[in-house]
Amino acid sequence: MTRHSLHLLRAAVVTAACVLGLAACGSSGGGSTSLVTASCDPGTQVQLASPLPNQTGVSTTIGQVVIVAYGSNGALNTNPGSWSLTLVSSFGSPVISSGLSPFSYPSGPHPYPSDFYYAATIPALSPATSYNVYLGQGSSCTPIPVGSFST
Image 1 (cartoon, rainbow, N blue to C red):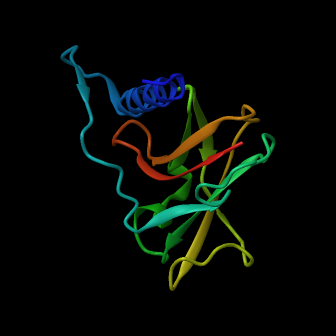
Image 2 (cartoon, helix red, strand yellow; image 1 turned 135 degrees about the horizontal axis):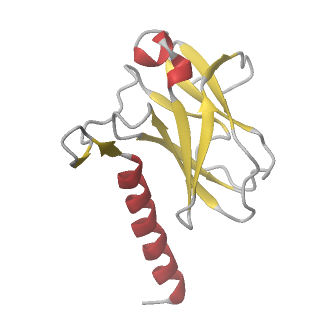
């Protein structure tokens, strides 16, 4: 196996571990720890809008990530502030966003017949790093993937 292949394998394993770690719940009254298995369901299809899916060369100081949702129905639209994005780097380091807010993006991508945009604030990112982006709602469900990009 080449050095590059080992790096990619390590990144995949670390990313999977981080996603599972995001799903871990705190202790219940009985003192046991459980793992949430239900995926977070925004009630609609979602994907990255800015940066675009698989975009490279993204600025480390973009300051926000924008997602686009199909339509205005579903749990995401009901209370967007309770949803957030988690960016998991190729090195396994998670970056948690602020809660989502409705966002006006007339020039954004239009993958659906009815597009609704939501933005989340993020801190500065690491250079030359790939990020997988997940949409979640606290620790009550397993975050779902919405896309990836690299700086």
